[in-house]
Length: 327
Image (cartoon, rainbow, N blue to C red; front, side, top):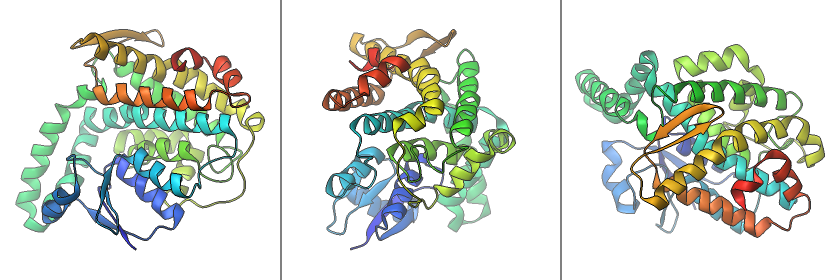
């Protein structure tokens, strides 16, 4: 009954799934995606993306959040027992997956030391068995291809200040929140941890954001290390205990940046626009709309509709400013 996870150390969504499997104690084999396993990967994958989990009965499943939710549906381990807190956890996971990815991707492919560091690691994974010349050629090809794709996450000269300010602000808010607890919702990991952690783990391995994190957020760095193999250290905390340091993250980042960006993106998709412009935190934002993000917004709205009656939820979402984007 061993699962196989085809992934990459450079993929935030791959390490996110691996961390969850470790937490749940699910027997698994970690398989680095490379040309050597490409035929096996294509046998099960519907999309050319990692992570791919192959079940013991030969089914291939993809997309990190649905993968985790599939196991949670059978035997929940991340549910807090509080409907309002579970929705907040799902919202923070979505914020990590969709907005946090902008931090990681921007720093990774915007600054030259990060470009070459990441391209080298990818080239080693893909071509290491073929020798140093193959690695060098692959490194150059990866660097050229990925720097050209930086606009897909919305990174460009106009949006760069917003992305970098958001990264540093989120680090400061998380650093304050993690002063008193090992995980985001208390003494055990929740969905929120896995979504945010995957992006920050990757950022911590890159030269520029890693230096920022080590210099300004030691508690976040300790959490990043802890989440490599998370474990229960106690109970979840009630919202009243979490609110003093978690509400600022909801207000300033989730309602201040992520949800208005996601809404503007979805509206652009509906209109059929090729690009869209909006203002986030007082700064200009422009990019090509992304269909996947529109679907993910629809999914978090569906989750809110299912949890709407949970005691205290609308109070939290109203105070934070999130409700107007979810209702």
